[in-house]
Amino acid sequence: MKRLISLTLGMAGLLGLAAGGAGCSNKEKEARMQDQFVKVDGHDLIKPDGSKLYITGTNLGNWLNPEGYMFGFQRMNAPRQINDVICKLVGPDKAAEFWTKFKDNYITKADIDYIASTGANTIRLPFHYKLFTDEDYMGLSSSQDGFARVDSVVSWCKANNLYLILDMHDAPGGQTGDNIDDSYGYPWLMESEKSQQQFCDIWTRIADRYKCEPTILGYELLNEPVATYFEAVQDSLNARLVDVYKKGVEAIRKVDPDHIILIGAPQWNSNFRPLEGVDFGSQVMYTCHRYGGAPTPEAIRSYIDFRNKSGLPMYMGEIGHNSDEWQADFVKTMKENNIGYTFWPYKKRDGSCMVGITMPEEWEEILKFGEGAHATFAEIREAAPDRVKAQVALDKFIDSCRFDNCTPQVSYISSMGLNPHPDKQR
Image 1 (cartoon, rainbow, N blue to C red):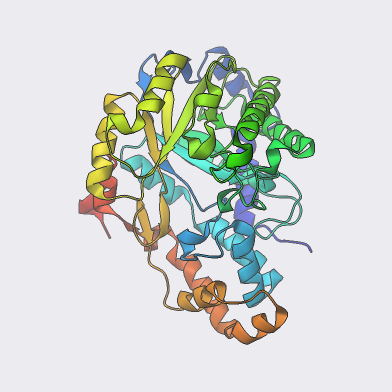
Image 2: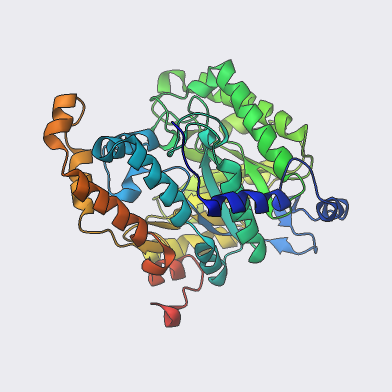
């Protein structure tokens, strides 16, 4: 089925050619010649002007890789499950329209401008690999708009002097084996040569497009690979992960020798033992995640020790969903131990984020259906609310998620070590 892409997005794609494109403009070639990329120097990241970059920022979670809990779902928590719910409620055509509007409105230049105004210097952009294929995803079944979306963020970040990390949050076959990678319950990427080739091909295309773009800080090959649920084969999967990483690094380096490549540990980016002694080449750094536990150096001692042994930078790609006091204490711990950070997430339903969405009252009907029984056709017919009401809920959500209608969470942002500008709250 043919899907329509908005004129705005089309313009973003055209503008994006100036940011990336298949080659480099004269200006970008000059930037490359002048070495305008962030460099790895021991445990530090060094900006082109010679000053140190200490990563401080947030994640644009949910935008290009929807997660159920950010909408209020509990059971329907993977992208394809959320799409399935919406299709059952209003049909595939209206679902496709919803996703296009969602991508157009959930993150805009106004959001990036606000992030920059808080004092952040880096944004991590999680994305689904399907945005760079012709697979069915977020309302499109061909001519996916991944590059146009990324190009827009690049231009918005460039205007605000922000760095951007590209994070493949959902990889071909699935790298995690849980809802966060939109997989089928197992990290099939580790065992599928076809998926690994697709993984490499996509990263090659991405790196070739942005090889001359200094706004891009780096490429994060995989998010949270190999969950903790596969103990019987965990060692084997972890070993295969190292091989997948080596393939990804090789694919990128064929077209881009300059940008940093970020390597995350298996088991929720926490178990660095399988990566000890592995040489991934130059311009490499590591990324860890942490939710819960004590906000102390002892709680992340294994991360610090691995960083010290590797002689390379360590960065906390995800942290958050805790009390303001805990987060403020952990920020202090990370700063004292030279570990930069991007909090998760920037925006979602209600609080525990930088910017909260006030959900429309009608959304409860969406949740009621999504959390209820709708596996059979009879259950769908019995449980589905009125289609008009469902459409109203979807339309109101699109309006509610726009930055002007969201509420910055003042204490949360302050706990991140950033400035929420409470005097400017709407």
